[in-house]
Image (cartoon, rainbow, N blue to C red; front, side, top):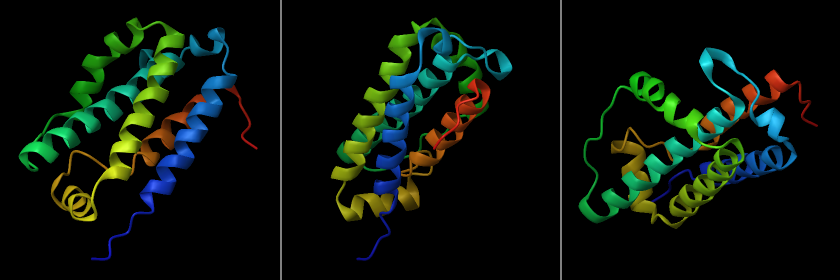
Length: 149
């Protein structure tokens, strides 16, 4: 079976981007306001939440088979904002890194058939975690005026 797994290297690259960014951010930058009532740290906690959700679902699906797990993403994001903002900024940043590492490792360990099944039927878990990270890390860099070299 041939299945495109370029998402593995994309995930690794954006995870390294996340780590590099977090390691250079000051506590003041982590507390910096972003759109819609978020902060930089809150957005990092948001990334951690979605990576952790993906990990929990992959683990469940490995045990029980892939099943439905629908939700209204906008409602979840809005409901989670309060929780994300309540996490201490540096802890939120470290949580984002930890959750990124955990989900990426789980994805890398998937056998090719399970990965193909998740890609085809597990619509609420994207094996490409990089796109979500790239979007939010770009927003953080833009609001903080960080130039990526």
